[in-house]
Image 1 (cartoon, rainbow, N blue to C red):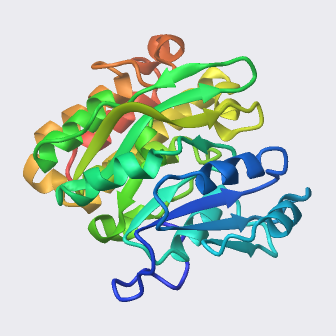
Image 2: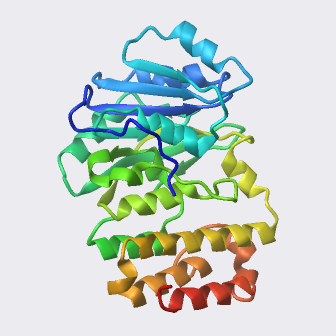
Length: 309
């Protein structure tokens, strides 16, 4: 279940076109650089909300002593929420139709909002729009791209299951009116493994995910990040997390009613995802020798192919 908070968005209390939502935790070394990139936006009609999770550094002090721009609001948490709850808290405080989740160490190009917001405003079939990302930090630099996900609802689902893992859309602009409660993140027992990818699948149920093929977003690579921790797992934990992830995808589609009308197509796409038949998704070279033989795989395939419980 999503971890949600009160004060849900209403179409009657909008004060700005877009809200940038920044969940922060122990972000003192880089939070002001992130904030500067927001301040430097050429698009001016935005609101930015920062939620500082209970930290043991001076993140909150740096923000409260530096920010005088009235477009910014800072919330200080008195207890540790964790990543997913903090994301949901800051989203819940937004009053704009359009929302962008921005992790506390990322940087956006000055034209980020100017370039992306008109795209989503001008097409009512779009659930989210995003640019390409450049990853930097710790000597690692790479461009991360996610192709657009479009077509009918079934076509979007099958495309996402077969070909998508890197969830660039998580750092995009979302139409909150279109996606409703699915804008909120959920958590899991594997250190929130790939919850951003799950989030992207939920958005694809509501509309198109559209790529703007320019680099307008910079993602900082840190060896303390969740993504880095996942990379350090042994093969068995990676396999268990991947199987859990695929089962979660199935659960979401079952709740949406997709198996009633498209059981064969959905079941096959889930199996394709689990075995990574259509594209390498998560550590395929490491897991490939285990995906077909590990006892959890045929059990999961049986559950997928069987009737709803």
